[in-house]
Length: 395
Image 1 (tube, helix red, strand yellow):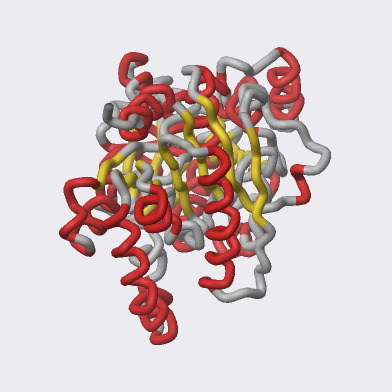
Image 2 (cartoon, helix red, strand yellow):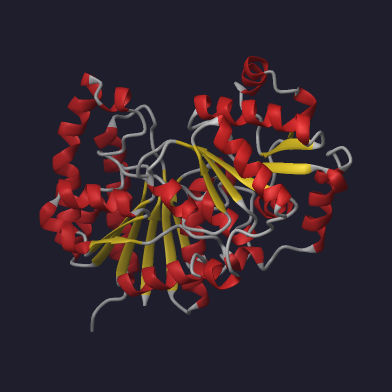
């Protein structure tokens, strides 16, 4: 069976945006499918080999996109190359993952012109993505949404299956497009169990080197965050840091370890909360496997978020690491509900709750988020298996 994957971002481009699609591509190749890719032209692709497991991809076709073009100009660039791929490769199924969203109209072309099965995958919502109410209801944004609504509606009508990553987003799509509601599915991001099986001794040594920056590491209390730290809520970041400042009086070796690029507003946040800067350690950019090894040494892993329907990918990495998780943000949200469902998950909305949660984890010597059997439920292998079923063409 031939499958054409359409993805704006694809390895060797390095971004969280490629994690889901590269995991699926590796899985399909391992299962013996013929996989080709249509993607945006990136300078990284010139001299960088594909990651392990993707070498068997039959072909990668690049689209030159003029970023100065408006939406339909960029979309037409994809459409022209897409038609050429469909004619030459004759795939049995097309998998379109987005954002970006210039590729959404390809659903209609796939179905109307080539009568080929097509699955549309939303890593993030398009028209109904509400990360900020103020931004969502801005008049200029509302006009755009009205303009693009019919484009998305027609795409969903053409798709054989529509996939998103949270139950909340699936509910939004079903309400917005009731005629397509029965074809909308939820397939979580999950953690990449195959990728983690490739962690080697060099990765472990690099992780140890970075962990050596923690003073008196053996006796330290480590609150770790991978990727974005206070990006989704500066105010709840202040809640966490203020609580951590008070906890240092009881646990003088407590540190907040940020595995990732230091965010621009962290210095200001520490000044406003009085959090001692020598108790904050940032690794800078860290390769994925090394970052995951670092998280295994944490006493607990942190989530700061306030988004209602979003879950993101970080929680699944934390499930794999299987250390207690402390969520600081608003509730109820889909993420807070997920965290609270684990015996080692703690949901906090204020300083007092953070202090109580951290104290309980330390004093009770809690070491895990959940049972090992539970963690396997969230592996990408299981999620990819579900996607494979949607991609299959009925005989």
